[in-house]
Image: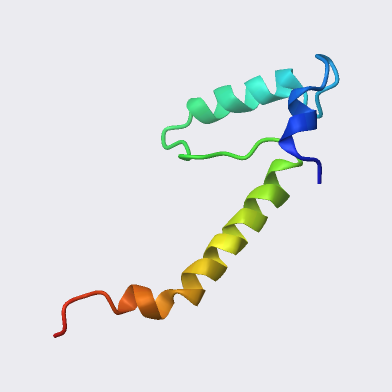
Length: 74
């Protein structure tokens, strides 16, 4: 997977995604009665986001005992 740096420095017109399609998707989502808080756009966005969420879930599970042990005793 390519890091952000090379993508930022890519000359205009060499983007992975189609700016027109992106704009259409943003408008479509903005017009929804209940739009999502976040939306992933582009083929590269899904695997990056799901990997990050997987890492976060692992951290949450690994620290579950500590998380659950911080309330007052009943």
